[in-house]
Image (tube, rainbow, N blue to C red; front, side, top):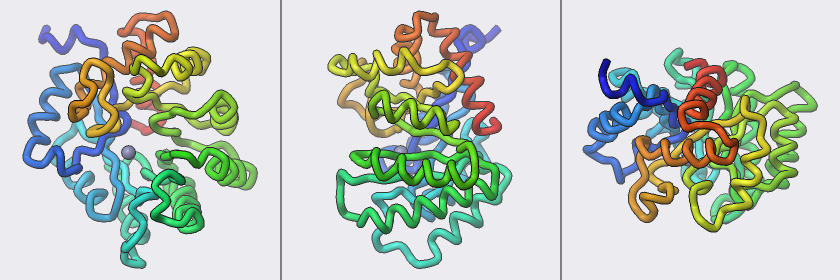
Length: 264
Ligand SMILES: [Zn+2]
């Protein structure tokens, strides 16, 4: 029995390994993820180029499961055919999800109307491919939930995830009612975030996922450092404590959920 057999299986459902902060180090990062018990890492595209890079890397590294999409804050300056490129990549059987898409009213560089048009195309692509949608939300819960609600009413339950969830109970309830999963990141481990832990404690276990959002949002013991998939164990540990179960049990639950949602 190797040492990894004793660790609970984990899935990091959101990492940006094509970020420049990982340049030249992805193989080492992947090896540390394996050593930490990760069985898959969903690598998430933010534009046409890194979406393609995610897919190409996954062809030679089976730990990685690619998602392709246009990040709502990265929509300026893209060629008009950028989304067509994403739609093309999305047909590849290796691609497990569409995104990340969503709405962001924090940075205010891309007009919300432009983000909404992009979100709608990603939602349609998710429905067309049957692949889960990965949703980003920052300071935009009201318009995002209105868009999701409209899609839900027109087309039925949504298959996807609100990633790095940090919204309120009403948003969580709304998302769950439409069929979405909620993914928690290192934010839940931070000292001042008791309200988010209280909220997480009430989320049905079959809708919970864990992620790092690497290289951002490092969990508490690594605060201030570059985040990486191996650190997802700390987020899973905190989530386990919120639910009063063991780390091993929460790892099993969240991994089962990730496998079901993304077809891993
Ligand atoms: Zn992200």
